[in-house]
Image 1 (cartoon, rainbow, N blue to C red):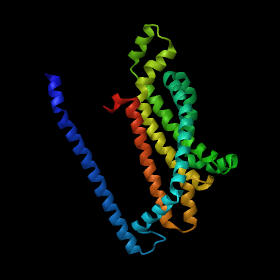
Image 2: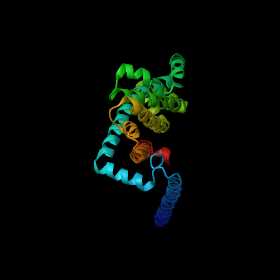
Image 3: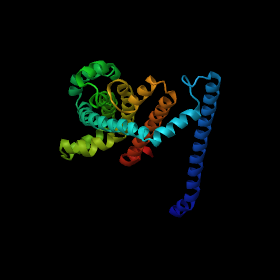
Image 4: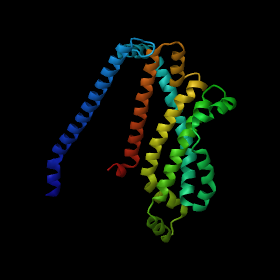
Length: 268
């Protein structure tokens, strides 16, 4: 009887969810409309297209750049660099975070170095990285890896330490090997925290790549912004800035999707 009632109520639940989604879309569109109107008014009052072009001029510039595929080319280059950087950062930070979370002794040894480096912004390493890597792909990848490493590491450590110790003790009582405990008990329990850390790593890496590409890359969104700024082509600059925001939002949604796939119980 309970299942029958649940199935009977399913259309109404789905309808309410669709209504909530529609309301969210309407709120977003209304907010963006207000933003565009205010932008158009300020641009009209400023009457200087170099300092602040109108929304129509930026939209036309974005269309032209998309038609020439230049917008998508630079976006793909920056996105690919972020994927490589997150892969490198995760490959280093997750095992290190597991070791620090499981061993207090190891944590006391490594933590001072981590806390010494963590407050230093990745952008601060750009001048030195220019000497080491030069202009190319290596510099932005290094800066993005550095920026994304610390959120992933700290999130992994926090997730491991929040694991219920009774689960680990029960596994040890049953004679489960330490490696199996880590892979079958600790990692699944820490996965929600790790996925949140991954989202933070995506955000910090994406912010860092734009700054790195402004100086040390021959392509990418940051490079395009600086190139068109030097040419005083502000509509193109703002078109690339808008693409940075769009891709940042898409990356965050992808990170949330990964969280729903690998840790669906956390979403619920």
